[in-house]
Length: 133
Image (cartoon, rainbow, N blue to C red; front, side, top):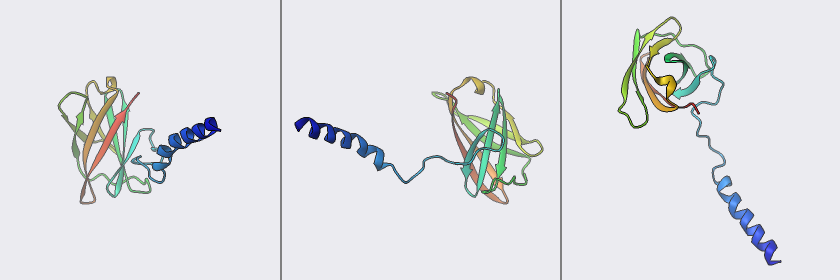
């Protein structure tokens, strides 16, 4: 009987932390990214970053993932690699997306990138926490 009670207490104690986080989501965007990149919420918009080697493409969508008209010729932002100071990044308009190159980004597994968006007169920040492991 003591073994049964001890085992039951142990199982209930282990399950309690799992139930404590039920009901909320820490993911920034739950939809599949249209171009296979990383999708994040950014104010009233969504932004997707697609990384191919050291080349980056940034797409901007409304909440229903319909492409937004790109009004600015370029966007600014920064990338923060572990144990380094942040480096500025400039995205230039290239048709239906913005493009940038960041030397060495393909060799880094974890980093943060922030892009200052201006869409329909509203300024928001797209925050990408990238983990390529």
